[in-house]
Length: 508
Image 1 (cartoon, helix red, strand yellow):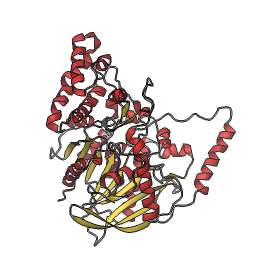
Image 2 (cartoon, rainbow, N blue to C red):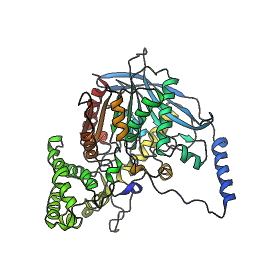
Image 3 (tube, one colour):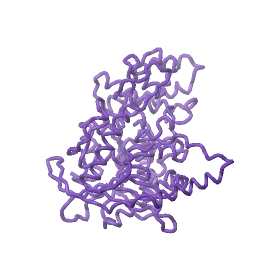
Image 4 (spheres, one colour):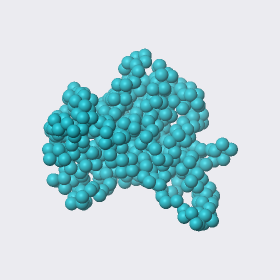
């Protein structure tokens, strides 16, 4: 994506995919390879202790002036193959409001992305009843992992079920690596088994008649319309609404940077938004309209003219310099085509800092400031793994009492590296259009942060503008907030997001 390529931002918590798979076994040594495979399968199936029974605890949180008494449950659901054999165990965290059962109370299923990210980011950052701080400038790995009430939670108007795909969180495969890649680390099977997990949770908990919603962040946002459409048309489960958070919705738009204007068109508005924030401007649709109009108009036209039109190149350099605040020499050397990785390095080069792809105004010291190319992990990723992992493991094992051995993968780079190639060429817009067309009552919210360069908001803007209008023209809405990929780390943006989500649910 965005010329950082999928491999460069692969498994960067919340959006991407695909490092290169490991080397194959030597062709002249098949017996050893076969033996190793069998040994892996044996260890997976037999040696791992089984998960404990589901565990629950009563808790209290406060939101919008209300006190909410609820039950937090951590447990697992099996994934079975065609013959009924258990091939994986998927862990969920559910929050259900206490009191008499209301048949009209919704339940929302939440996914993060990666591929390789657990649902902890939406859970303990955006919409769960408790939260831990992460994702903002100044956050550090050693910050407290103590949970506090989340003012942005959705629990007052919907029960919540957070699902960790196989290989993330505590969820695990029970088959060998090759079989796991085929069954779980592949685009289509991922949608199918996660849809079945949603179905199985509804069945197990007697919630088939409840209003149902799906939400997901980043690659989880890619999953949202595809799971929705699969549930609608294959498993017979209607979905009332979708909320896609910083979704990785239309990856093919990033391709062919040498002749297509789209990779540059879709990132320029977010680069501009970050520059406006550094200038102290308050971001809004009205403020951003000028650069959006330029991006889809004169900018795209001049990009297509190329270097054989010097006047077009000069216009590009002048406009892009003004919009991004970058050094004009760098912009000229780039021909007005600002590659995301270079942008993040160049922005604060004179300060010896590096910017995050998730929010380019969040920085850290560059450990190799004189290296010809950036040699670092992402600043936001460096700071979020420790507090989210510590907080979730403590919650599961101590607070809820779900005693389990093993590592919790808030972000699994192994899943990212094992993932099926091709995510960068696969879109979710087709399923989004079909799911909306199939249900004229469904509402959709697509939410972004202005400063996000991993999943730029302008991609979703262009996608929505090309969709046919069916029924209420406002039932598919794009909302953009100050901040980046995890805009909900900013209290004002989280509050605005919650207000928009309330409209999707028809809640007050």
